[in-house]
Amino acid sequence: MEILLVEDEARVADFLVRGLQAEGYSVQWVKNGRLGLAAAEVFAKDCAQAGTAGVMILDIMLPELDGLTLCQMLRQRGVQLPILMLSAMGETSDRVDGLRRGADDYLPKPFEFDELLARIEALMRRAKQPQQEKASSIGMIALDRDLPGLRAKDQEVPLTLLELSLIELLLAAEGKTVSRERILSRVWQTSRDPLTNIVDVYISRLRRKLQKLDSSVTILNVRGLGYRITQSRP
Image (cartoon, rainbow, N blue to C red; front, side, top):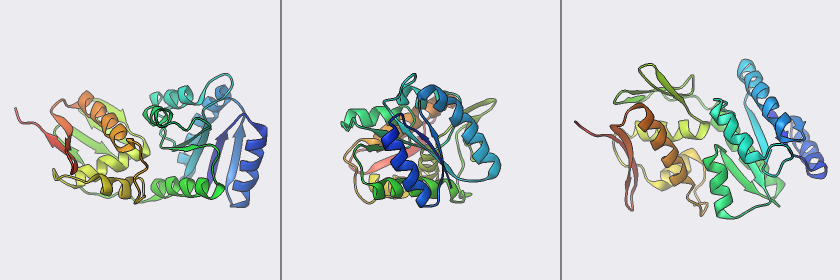
């Protein structure tokens, strides 16, 4: 169980490193954004080669390169490492911004250590769970679980861990509507609404990626019921 921690506050980092190591995690600590960017790429490759689940804990307020930009750059480079973002900025708009940049989860400071552990464990479980061999294509788009990402002809678009879980759930429904509650339960493994538009953020991200590959495929918002993936007919 591997953790990459990118945090510039020595007091916070020391607390997290000691606490996570006591829970059995192997923790690598990096103190600024520039070093974190390079370390994350190596960390992701090492985890993939070793077949181990790894999570990056990323603070937003970092010297040299802020966490939001770092996260966005990693996603643009195709790094699909699960990212848990930390920040003293707890406003909903800040959380949404972090999720839109590619974070998989967001935890505002101050936080309870037990909650941090629960969120890390949830990300680890999703990384380890076997992929379902159900519906894996729509229109010209095929789901590539090994990438992970979407393919159409000679084009491909990478997916984050949560995006992969969400598109799998929508495809498995085979055109039926999937409720927001079911999405939260299956993808975020929670029965409580986090009181943010986190589902809408991820649906919007998937829509953009689908449109790049096949403009006839989209995800519809069925008001009051949920979402369904569909292909328009010519």
